[in-house]
Image 1 (cartoon, rainbow over the protein chains, first blue to last red):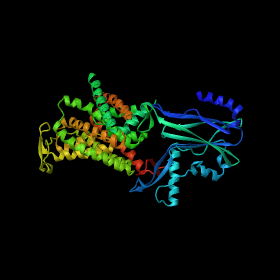
Image 2 (image 1 turned 60 degrees about the vertical axis):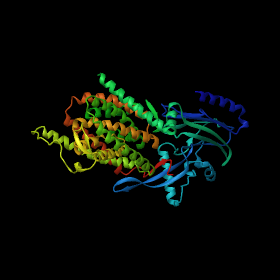
Image 3 (image 1 turned 120 degrees about the vertical axis):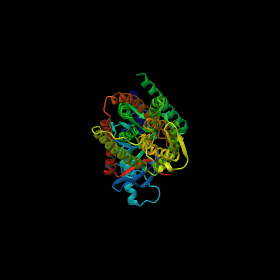
Length: 244
Length: 305
């Protein structure tokens, strides 16, 4: 609701004073909080242009190393075989645009700015033959798309009155945590006029964050606590059982 | 209602997991088995990462064994000395098992090893149980024959003999120690208590009286699974407390339902039914291993270091 009000205010404001800024953009939230009831969430992305150009928004998650393994048939069963590691792989990646990218954004611009999954700069670690590398790379993107962490094609930014744009960005329940960047490009006549980057934090909060932190930073304590809980539950269950 | 699991890093339907806990708990109550060997594959079918399913299930089994052993303790059906020897072996085995788990996980082969272990053990146990229950149903029609109390074989010639009064045995400690180690390894890798292997081993290999077998097995399972839980938590960070609590609640309710239902049903047919269920789970895993996957490539975050 707050987001919508902000959007309305922005609408009014952009009508009068947007001339100074070629593009403004904001999100309805500064962070996505993963709580116990988290099942995925929408974040409203909204902004305005001063009336010219197209807008492209790239949402990129934290960079991680990802292993891709190829399954092989050994004695009739499918087992994990060869492995290729990719470094600096965005854990999450989505593109939004006011128009179909293929039609108007030059390839060179897309490659330079890594706009679109096919232009992501994913390099395998070590010596991997080019043909094989591209196969593993395609598999990596396909698997990420399968679990909704990468977009299939660019999502459409709705453009109102030639100036205001908005879109709901969906983060699924398996969204990787960390610092995200929302980069907005204003493109006019095939050239990037201006780039804006705003951070978005996706984080576990409350008990979810505490459990995760204790499990990783104080794992011995966590293990002992898990055992104590189990013993108490076992004793409790037995006591309940005896009363009947 | 959905709950986000902080370690598994996905959200699950609370009622579905509770239902599974109650279902498996009911079976445990009816058949007197731990249920880990059914619950872990079910969790994996649900989409929980196999490593988290195994680590968390070990934690849940601590609770069900504590709950189960008390009743046997009150009736004096726990051989603490034998349990002690078994658990020394079990702690060694589960420590090695968790280490092996970590190595296999880094090699990207842990899922396969978990699945194969399940196929082998569910297959063997399911078939043995099926044969046993068919025989029992036939035997009900023909007069029973007397068996010897226990047979003597080469196992009784091993050194380091020890007297186990409660079990009325005078045998080498090496044998229970070895059984403990083997079951400990399996329990760490498969996320089971191992009762379904331990109980037959105690009866047929050690020759323990049936009355003390279940209590003693439960007694040592508490420590072996507690050790596995601790090590999975410290080495692999794969114990999800939220998931464990959901499973615990289900198991506590289910165990009561199961005991009530169990007393009203006939044993041999029940065992036959459980055998078929075990074989069905085994069949599903075999199918998953054999069928060509939709995507020949799989991804994992973290990479090899």
